[in-house]
Image (tube, rainbow, N blue to C red; front, side, top):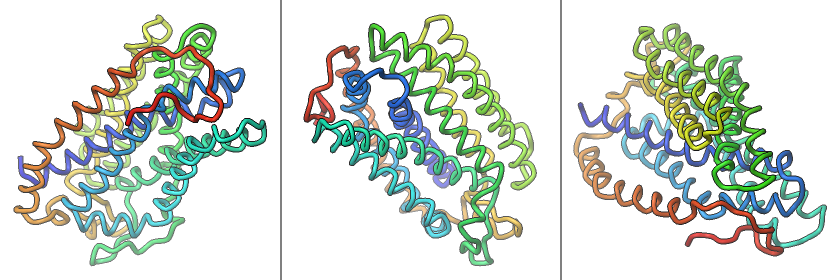
Length: 345
């Protein structure tokens, strides 16, 4: 395996890690208006992700930094062409973070309702835009002969990319509901379990449809054979069907693991469908950016590989320890004046 291919796979790994970990706390945010019956239970839901949500966002920073260092041409074209979409994601993430911190600064109904709405908007909007942006890598965007983006913001929207955004929202909502079944108890547990069962149906249907559509787009737009991309797509379908069956059988831990596999498989489907290119050009396919053509020099990739080999295991161990410490179920009432309790620092 060449270093260019290694780093293409690592960037896919970082995106998969971000979607699996940040996905469930986005999902919790989506469920805030519907599952809890009062502010006390809403506070419990927020405290389930309180110690981990900011650590989960580190995976996004790492994915962006790795793309910048390993594939500067890809980073430059993608971040310039998708500038408005990525700016929108940044605004949505900021709104969501502010809602976490400010929700507990007051106790009025209007005050908490405002920040509840802000959290929901951020939790739905960011995954929607991420799905649209990443699916455009496979569908293709207008690039000129120098690899520069030659389209408009409207070129990012199509039936396929919109379906991708909606699918990501549905998968994260299902994933978040399953996470809550592992962290809550009593009547709240019964309601989040019922929500997970209901959300399993659109998650399975949309997830299966999206990966099948992605394979078709890869064959049509990226000159791919069916088989390579169809393998991770099949994993997605099987994993989501297993998650739907497991949650109905009362095995929510297994269902949560299955949705994680399904999300990883969806990211893998996109990256397998994309290789050996990092960004497809449409309608002029010859202008597409390739893995080898967009990569940094060999020495840069070699140094990055050594640093990653040392640092990545430490990061995984620390984050795993954090989840181990905060694995218990929550039952208490929301604490006035605090958005989260406890928080890991």
